[in-house]
Length: 233
Length: 233
DNA sequence: TTATTGAACTTGTATAGACATGTTGCCACA
DNA sequence: TGTGGCAACATGTCTATACAAGTTCAATAA
Image (cartoon, rainbow over all chains, first blue to last red; front, side):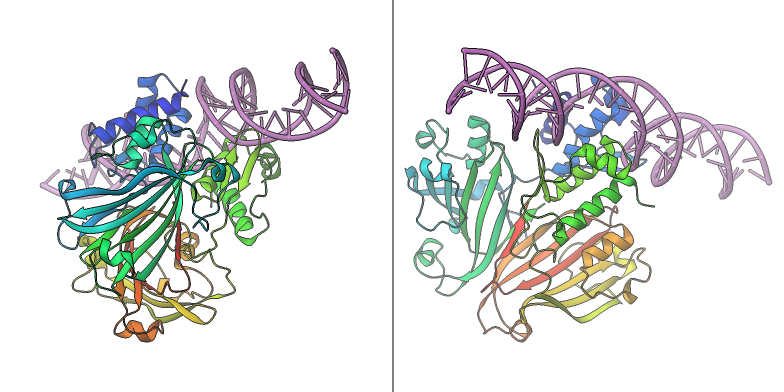
């Protein structure tokens, strides 16, 4: 069973994400939450601390806990145009290859554990379009550990992270990434429809999950000529 | 005076960053830290919780608190400590301009509040070198709100964030950023000593702090030819 | 020798209460 | 009509304690 502070956390989190509490709203005070859930203040504070950590609330001494913002999915850098934001409707995903089970590449971008190496990996290659223009080229590598029927799943309109979270109870907890600016060359020119030599944003990422020793890796090429990569943290 | 948990946190943090505790080392147990500092376990746990939050330690039930990887590349993307990565020996900071109080630029990269606008901003222009090669060109804008003697401080070997944290108790809590890959041109060519047209990583950042409505803004140009930008989250 | 039990460690969860400090708004006073 | 101060309420810090649960390793039993 979930610990009590976790239950309160999950409930408040759900309410914030569902809009029961909106940006700028003040949560019930700590003492009120104590009464509501029949627990003591340190336990409530533990729940609020987790929310603070997520960036979902800001606490102010003497005032209260203020709902902050709806966070992006961890690991997904959302796209923002220079003038106006882009609705999700016009972002389409093309799957170029996979998901299929392959061996790990010879020289991988991150160090792999023995368990990961012998399990093989699930390979997924995608291009994401905004207004019919390719913006991202994205290769994901997922250790093939206890992910039944993964390759037969459909990815229509669902993000990789959403499937992991909902179907496999795997949550992205954090991670690390390396960024570079590179020149477009080779297949990137065709995939992103750019000129040779154009600056391209390149990322390598290793994402930690709620499963110990289970990571998701990806490399990402992004044409940032018309749209910046946006991230909140 | 600093609260006790903060003192323990600062001490452990310092020791980790200075290498007293190294990657993989196990910190003294919570009970031991209690005895060492004459405080109770919840207080110690508060300190450790902050370290966990910073990503400096990982806790494992039954084992202990394990010092986590110290980023090898440049932790510009991580919230805590910009220059805390890369060996300090090889990273040098040249201050090109400032810190000085100026008006905010006409068309600023982010929207500013009325309070910020009328306060003016502290301007700081820096180049950071690794092995005598310029890697970053960094412009910071800080709202000039309640920062006594800021412009007369010396920045020798201290990061901007470290000064804010230690001298003004201002901590970076989160933020947002926009990333682009651009072509080197104009003064960037000279500042970063690159060829015209070379891909350069460009960032615009707005950092939230522990002070409500107090933000730090910066734009950053980075030559990622030899070093990646590294971030943990 | 090998397997397993258990003691002694670790961190995780939770209670109950005390006092400090920041924020707000109302009420009494000038 | 202001306005200063106080009361009520918010979060921040801290003590003291208890039991749960994961890890390790050595002593014991097969």
